[in-house]
Image (cartoon, rainbow, N blue to C red):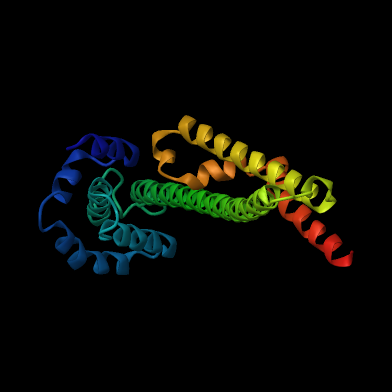
Length: 247
């Protein structure tokens, strides 16, 4: 008899001979043949329900083998009218049977509850991790969109500023629009470069399993100040264009 069986046998107080009988290949069949007649002779409905619960657990394929073995042993114990306390003694004949069956049923139910709680904890943890991953990815996508928009705006501004400054006879430095575009391009370029540098450093410090995901590095830097600096050139460019149109 294995270790778990010893522990359950001690808990249910079932003699080893019943456990040995329960381990035989034909034990479930024997119990199925004799249990209905035994339950028909028992007047205690609560004991009948307890025995049926024990039989259901003992024959459930999802219950571990060690527990099923002890359930069959407890049922064999119930079938024997001459056990520790003979069944024909009024009032007390089934006390030992009730104790053995109750211990088995309680042990199985506790095992089921433990497994259910563990499953709920795993599911809750998985859901929380999924929600956090979705939130990080959404924040990273916002950061990446702003970053890309800033780079596009800065490239256009740099091209405009360069072409205007190199034009023959250019008086661009006296044009407030040219100066504003130059400052906006400079701010946006520096902000984008610093953001890229911070993302790269964060990615290098990340664990190996994280380094495969750029989303994490982007989300780690998606703070209010960084997002504001990235978005500033776009906002300034829109304001400059509005002022230019109004003028």
